Length: 72
Length: 347
Image (cartoon, rainbow over all chains, first blue to last red; front, side, top):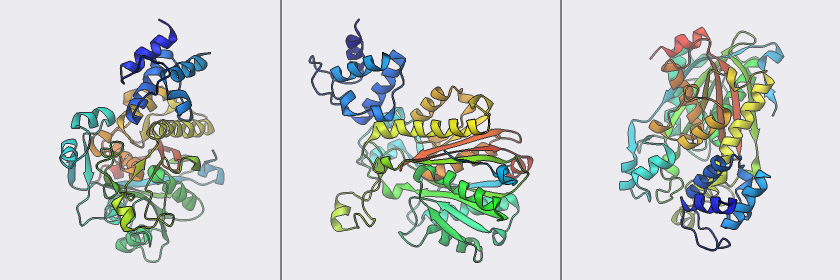
């Protein structure tokens, strides 16, 4: 599965997601923290507080781009 | 981070005894649901790891808890209140906006004219108070009470998902005295980062937004956590950053620490802290399940419980950690000595 597919599956485990990767994610704070930790475990990355901003978590596409950049 | 080591001044600082006070009223998650909280009891536990917390009675306030915790520490140390040179109280929930809760405590204890003052460092309150106490002893005070006390139950909005289940009330105290050079309280360091000043805060009631009918109606006197994920991650980063800086200053790593006694924001934060620090569950003291997040008092109560329960004994290298609103954070390395272990066996 592609990284984008992995991210979609992971987020979908915790929240309702649209078919459109550019659609806004409606994540409450508790769900967002859960997803951050799941991303860290799945992709072996460390996510800092200052990185948990809309630019990185507003949409599935943004999350995937962030994870891809962090793994680079 | 500047790390203060009393030995650098040719002085030694020790904790002679600790004490704590928890209110009698036990509040369960089911109690919060019954009071209107918007989470189920299971959700509260799953998200925070908290099962119960203690809340004060209507007649109790922060100074009452602080007085009890100080008396506990003084009795264990066999030191009279009149012999204490200074009292430093970390709190974000004083009895009144002014004067300080510390002055109320000082008078109740019978400390004569010894100086007493509050400091505000939120959940890092105990470590900030301990830092002041250590510096005072290192420069000549005989005994200083470092106490942290909070009554956050008075500042809760039970309809707020982010904060309704987290907070409890309580107080913890340490009697700080002169000791052998290089032993006892070996090092302590603090950090503040005001960029997070509105991440967790009580908006109204101060000079920026004075109390009014409108602020009360809008629940602006309750704790607000408007950037929950950042607060969660920042708390862990704050504790790790201060811990690593402090340990580096004394030539140690987490592997050299016997017991980490951290602030207890919630269980998930402690689990993440342990994971990132590479320490096993046997090395981290946890009581958040029973008493919740008691803000600045948490770390002091946890230290008292670690000592009283025997988890920390003579020779144990204890790393105290805290992080809180502001942001603030702190770390201290304490080597438990025989006198502190003996004091901790007293009721």
